[in-house]
Amino acid sequence: MKVVVITGSGGLVGVEAVKFFSDKFDVVVGIDNDSRGYFFGKGGSVAKNIEKHLQEVDNYVHYPVDIRDKDRTDKVFGEYGTDIKLVINTAAQPSHDWSGRYPLEDFEINALGAVNMLEKTRQHCPDAVFIQCSSSKVYGDVVNKNEFIETETRYDFPTDHTYYEGFREDLPVDQSLHSPYGSGKLASDSMSQEYARYYGMKVGIFRPNCITGGPHSGVELHGFLSYLVKCTTTYNVFGYKGKQIRDNIHAYDLVRAFNEFYLDPKPGEVYNLGGGRANTCSILEAIDLVKDITGKTVDYVILDDPRVGDHIWWIGNNSKFIADYPNWSITVSLEEIIKEIHENAIQARQKVIA
Ligand SMILES: NC(=O)c1ccc[n+]([C@@H]2O[C@H](COP(=O)([O-])OP(=O)(O)OC[C@H]3O[C@@H](n4cnc5c(N)ncnc54)[C@H](O)[C@@H]3O)[C@@H](O)[C@H]2O)c1
Image 1 (cartoon, rainbow, N blue to C red):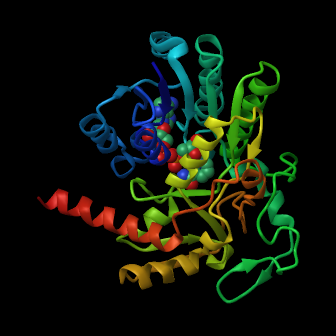
Image 2 (spheres, rainbow, N blue to C red):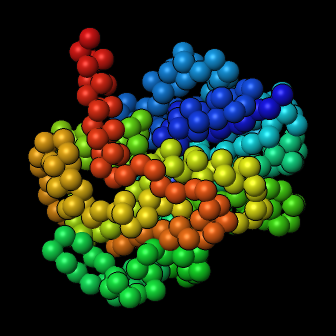
């Protein structure tokens, strides 16, 4: 029997991973306690996504368990043992601002929870491939020390700049401001590498910037594109004149990359995987795109202060991943992503009315 364990199975990446892997494994084990609802309130809850898995995915088994809970996670992993061939750890507290308010709880989930998942894998299924969803935030604000050119709608690098096509994995990760979120993610990222190098496990680490897609339960504190498309009040732009650059990857393309790694693991490797230059936008450009694609005019205000430690510009350079996995490329464009989020929002509203 082949089992995949997906933590955070009700979240954005988790939903896509459940869909993608359900016909490739005999059993899909989802672990998610709807903490997103606890972090962000009703608008953030993923209960509807979990319900949908249970109704539509025949081989899906759900465990509403906290990834920090050593005993209960031990029982889940113990039940399937070495039948577990793949573990994807997407469960996390994902917001900078939330982590600033509750640093201890954030660290417990993002760092200790991740290590608990690595440890359960080591104890019960050490040959399984383990994917750690890390983040571009592990680099902290060192990226802001670059000189950018400023256009009417965005900050950018000149075309001959070494990072024009995106930041490579050669950036330093310390001696900069990360936010507690970024530091917690860095701790779990580093431990994930350690489980590959020290314990010899097949661990892969992915450091995306903005993951997005239709099922995202976007809220002001996390999931900017989803929140922007759905926002019915004034949208707050946090600093940088709205010209900060975000690199958007559809969760489906990210999960396809996980699958490439699963089929041919390269233990301990880290990848800055993102949507690439073609899928980037500034907040100002995103607001224009939403209008062009959906007809919706977003009422917005630009605040002076950026979020603490927020990046002015991020594009992840995909060339290391593509060199290792030449069959992979981006398949969902930014325009398609916005269209999908918009259509999902309409369907959700229609369901509420019905
Ligand atoms: N979305 C992004 O833009 C982005 C960017 C970079 C990195 N990441 C990372 O990618 C991963 C997935 O992000 P996402 O957008 O799918 O997040 P998400 O918030 O949509 O999903 C995370 C899921 O984990 C669950 N969860 C949280 N804490 C838990 C706990 N203690 N026990 C069990 N379940 C718990 C939540 O209920 C939620 O369903 C996270 O590790 C995040 O840090 C996300």
